[in-house]
Amino acid sequence: MSDLQPSLLGEDENKQILSKRRIDILAGLIKLRDNIVKKAQEIDLPLEKISMTNKRLDNVYENISVFEASFKKLKKDNKAYLTQAGRLVFENIGKLKIIENWQEFNGFLVDLSNEINFIIILTGREIQSEEFLSYKEETDRTVLDLKNREQELKKYIEEVKTVIEQTKNIKIHDYYDLAAKENQEKSDLNRRLFIFLIFLSLTVIWFSLVTKGYFGLKGYDYYFFKGSLVLTSITLITYFLKQSVKYQKMADQCKQTKLELEAFPSYVANLSNEDPLVADLRRELAMKYFGRDIDNKSNDETSNILQDQMKNTTEMVKAAMEVLKKSGNQ
Image 1: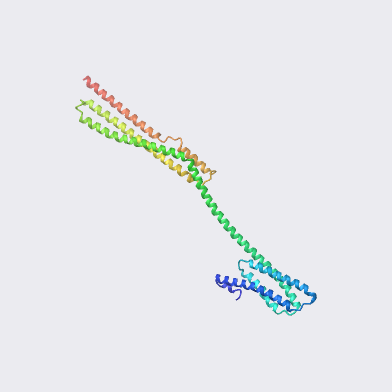
Image 2: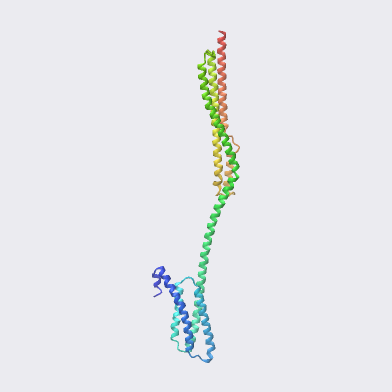
């Protein structure tokens, strides 16, 4: 089979052909060595050349052994290399058959020794190439493994940073949670008082209508009592309603702040503590969450309502007193 045929076959068939060629080369080396021994015994050597020839034979045998050992170390089958190694072995087996005298045999040993030395060098390069590729593959796997470990470590560090940040802020979370509960309880209490006063005012107004004659409330006295009751009821109902709304807003604000503080560590986990953005965020959040008066507007509104109701009540009392004075003079 020619050297071009393997490239036209499938990958598995190429491997089988190259593997068979490797086996043939090893078998050819053994045959070449045995044939050299036989040829050395067949040829008549001059007495003065026996020592030199034996040295060359020993050198050839040694080179063949080195080549065989190196050849067996190869792990991959390189087509070009195997072709050259096979040519060396089988061509020299053929050359050995036509040698008839000492001079030809001596020249053959010299040439074979040089060719084997050259193929040994090529074999060493093949071995180095395989070792380099193996080292490169191992290095690539190590680099990939290190990258994966780096990603895992980064993820672990981010998780640890998140936990640390959450641990640092856990007391602040508890403070806001406690404030939210307290404000919610106050809001619920004022809401219940607001509803109770509505029913109480309606009941008292109805009761005053029913018992109007029993208590002797007539004319201006009755209307004064009724007006005072209505204004007082409206004032108290409005006050408790505003208080309920105020504390509800404060409770909602505390809940929102608690949630934002809990989410903040996860948001900045991917950022370095030296990042200016983190410092700016902390500064802005500190100004937002601490030292602010979130119910100032509600206080002002409640105060204005009370002042208006007190003013209206005072005016009504003055008017009623004037009417009573005029009635007494008549």
